[in-house]
Image (tube, rainbow, N blue to C red):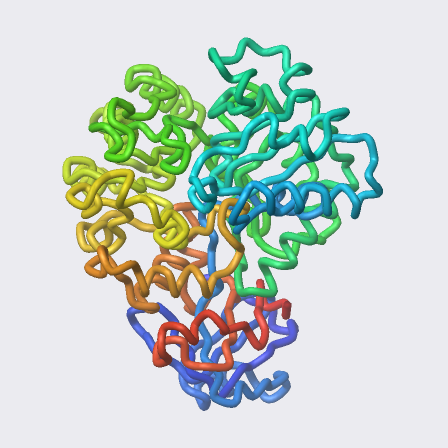
Length: 513
């Protein structure tokens, strides 16, 4: 427990329903904060006595209090940048609607001659459910690059201008259709305007402020490059970060990270170095997830493995030797097994002290589940995918669907689960996340989680996956004072009403948001 300066100001919050998620005191009426940490948690009388006569007292009026949420997989900086520069295509029901949103975006930005970018379409919502084409985007503009990316980020389509300016060696047929997947999407976007430092700063502050207002007090943020990390450092030096950042670095930047002397855990309460991000496969939506069997709705296609097990094991070993945790994107069941086996091989006879983790694990196998539990391999999961990936049961068939997003089974087996939105892929909405974990589709009700189970993983699971369980994850004396104050009892209301919940206020390190 941290020592507190005797003369520091204290604030006592009383008359609440404080769900601490601390097994020693699960429910309390009050807590007190001093220097950004919990000084006392318990009854009104105990907290007032510990806080002292000079403490400021805030009456919670029966409000529900839970620990601050930790989004364990979020592209928050990129999301902030997209809010400013990219057309929102989420929910488009047709190619015509997608084109109109792109035109509206161009008009909003003065119809300049620059790039036209859009993100978030899902071809499964179109009639027929097929990808847009190069010609579809030519109808928006043919004198500048027009590129749209699928909601998962693993597929993109460019117009003729964009395809002509792309100098990469693309797969056969890509230039004709305009459609590219996985690593080729990066080649298509190469040359897009780079944001300025000021634009990155504004993106961090805007997206971070949105997260804070919703009760997300810390994020495991996937960075596109080390320049974004530099801007986080700059804002941190100015004490302007609105939430806590656990910075996930692309594996491609590993050599530079080592040169800088970085390693997992380096940093402080507000900005800490996290894992190296590795990709093993693609996505279900683009049918590029690596599967053990064919996609049920695309016979002969088992997706793609972007790296084999031996090479992945080598990457994890190198990261481990340099003191880095790894966070490996694995969606298909084959990708998950390859990843778990690679972690197991890299560890040899060691325990998983660096907590090498799996991102997504959307399609599981029993073999992988058992090994993840035995090796204490954390996984970040995304409950919102269950609804937005409504076509998953067609992708894998009803028999394999038993192992799609099996959150309840994971937790029961002892796999450390952390909750996340994967925003910008999904909406940055903790209450939609909690609702979706509870109210699943009719084919997978057995995997539903109660709000209590979800929040335990959302707060405590995120803390464990980032080596911060001694500071975060529960409302406990000595831990950082991160809480969400809700006007209604989230554990005792009908599921649909959770969607409308918003905090009365949020504390991050005792600072009100």
